[in-house]
Image 1: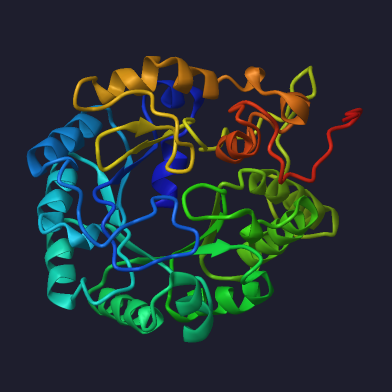
Image 2 (image 1 turned 90 degrees about the vertical axis):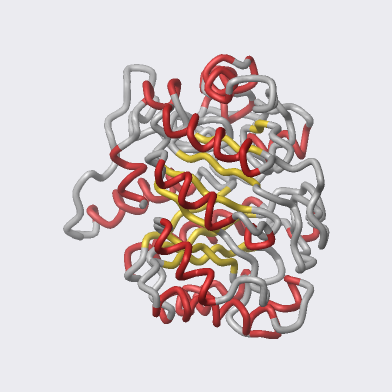
Length: 370
């Protein structure tokens, strides 16, 4: 699935369609996670997109040639039509992933139905390497055991699995243990999320810039040493760290190619442009609102009355986010701004300015004086 996004990259693709679309099919969930951006509740909202509306959305995303779709929540398994939606997305030409919650709602027979409907990957959240740490963060005892059961069921059914981990003050010391867990369950990807203070997430979960930099450096080492891919959410500066790590590795005699890409005459790094809030990425809420991401609560329109393609391609919010020359603060002068761009969601949460610098990036561009 990571390769799908690599092949679909390029600035023209970013302007034409998202490389990754996420649809929050419901906000209903039986967990009470400490960081939940949605402040999920146990019951479904009567106004969430219907099956017919959802199928129309999936068909349109397929027409836009979106490579990858994630059905998320809440807990998407709380929707009785989930298998039908997976099938509709697959039929539309989308590579479909689902992110269920670690609860008894999703059972093996339904997983098998999703596999047969075309499910490409199952992504589950694991926020601690053991029941005590994970369940404390997720707010429900037994969630770790249910998550492991779901993972085992998926693996036995031949469904590739991904581990999502929210890293913060609560589990930063368990990073290697979490990587070991991902390896033990044969994950194909470990997606590490840096908390954005939105929804239930408070600032107490945030790491400081220096600790974030150390975390990203450790993730770069893990990406070299472990048998799965590593990506980050709300930490686009991981791409800079990976570039720097590769260059350092080669300078130490390591056999690695494609090190640090060329720079243009202005000194900007010309590496592949990364996906971030509104840049090759869009998020559709359970009510049909279209956001640059689930952590940037600025709606650019609603799919119930505006074409999702028009919102992504033409709305002032999305076009501004794709203009890296509009970035402000040290992000605006950073040579890595094209491949990183900083977390726009975190900048907005911290300052109210969507183009401000990312407050959790420790990198200081040459000559920058704050």
